[in-house]
Length: 206
Image 1 (spheres, rainbow, N blue to C red):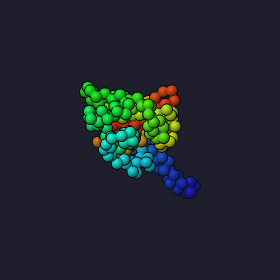
Image 2: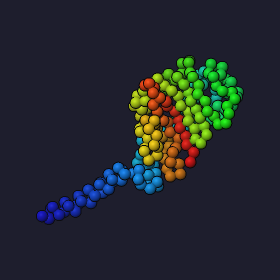
Image 3: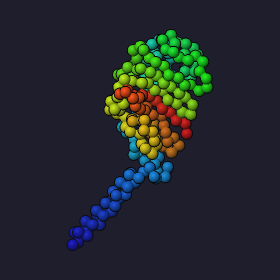
Image 4: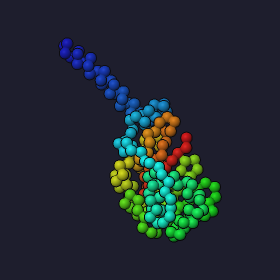
C-alpha cells in the first residue's frame, strides 16, 4: 500500500503536467498572443535556422548575374525592391528577352515570363512574380509539385497561430518569430496548380 501511495505521489504530478502540456499545445491558437509568440520563438524553431541568410546586393550585368540575383531573392538573401524600380537595371533585364515594365506605376508589381534556362532549387524557372507594398514577395514558378519542393528543402507547414493561408504549404523562416516581429521574412512554398509551385521570399511589415 505504501509503495502504491509513493508511486501515486511521483507519477500523478508528472501525468498532470503532461496533460496540461498536451492541452496547451492542442489549444495554443486560443492562448494570449504573447504566449503564442513565446511558443513560436522557443518551441517552433527548426534546425535550419541555425544559420540565418546573409543579405547582400547582387549587381545585374549579364545572364549569369541575373540568375544569381533571382536565386538570392528567392532565398531571402537579397532585397529586390530598389532594383526593380531602377530603369537602368530594368533596361538590362529587358535585353535578356524579359518584358520588364520600364514605367511601373505605384509600388513594384510585375510578373516576367522566363524562356531561357534559369534554375532555382534545381528546377527550371517559368515565371517570376514580385510585389512590394506593406511587406513584399518575390516568387518564382517552377514545374515541380509543391510537396516535392517541401521535401527537398526541408520546409514545414506554417504555424497556424501565425499564418492562416491554405495556399502556403511549406515555410522556412529566416529568423525566429517574436512578439515584436511575429512574421519574420520567410521562404514560402505554395501550390501553383497543374503540379507546379511558387517558391520565394515573403516579408511582412508589422
